Length: 374
Ligand code: FE2
Image 1 (cartoon, rainbow, N blue to C red):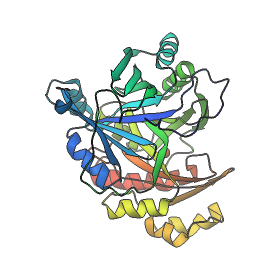
Image 2 (cartoon, rainbow, N blue to C red; image 1 turned 90 degrees about the vertical axis):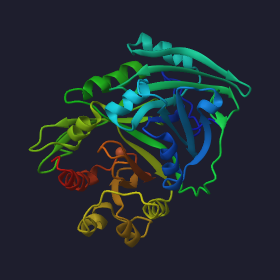
Image 3 (cartoon, rainbow, N blue to C red; image 1 turned 60 degrees about the horizontal axis):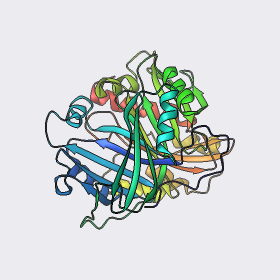
């Protein structure tokens, strides 16, 4: 099948080549129903399935795709299954951030030599469409990275999965690719995981935010962003910092019962359309007050998009040395205040919306107060 990523740049000095995000797998309580949510609300198309009907007895997985983004939603068939235990502890959450590589065996061996902990040694999966090699290591919390080598495969997803369509008339909403995936880790653990990505996977430290950058009257957090050789994989890592009240990161860690993926940022090139559609389909977003828009023009200058529409849809704007960006954050997409999505449109900007942090965290605090956790 078509590898899912943008075109690869020539990177001769990259010691740990990764082509892009291959898929993101959620362990969830009811994958069948979650699959409907991602089709109806987010415009993903159901493309593949495995479960009892395909000879897999212990679980069911639904594969959904929109442009270069691929999600796998998995539920277990029994209470003692590792997937059920994961859901019991964490709620619905991200289990695997899978990375597309040219050589899964080499990626795995290199990672292990450099100190990664193995979850599963390389194995080759085969069916009538060809073969896929996979190997898996641990990262923060109970989260995993699977290296996927699919140079020789023409099936719908992976061996063991059958092509599956849905009767839903899915309307894509312009989501294109995974821009970045953010991890929340426990107090004092950020540098350990930044070093893990640097030492094990050859990532570079892009940006550091300390509690002076990211604090409000009440709460604070620290963040460092690491990125792989070609820049297609960006992993910001957050940890809580001391504030007067409980930070959003502490709230996440408490409800997720440990470190895990906090948000997945997905790129669009028409954020006004994407967010308008998401809102009409019932996706809820954090809200910044109208006063945010009183200063936005002087802060970011000229932008192409209609400011009235940006204000109506409550989209945030920021500018850096390279250009500007438009972004918005959903509320958590399950009952626990854990995983959420960011929708981002980059017009040159390579950063993460630092100018929006304060307004954003105040919006999160208002939600925390409603939940009684601030
Ligand atoms: Fe983000």
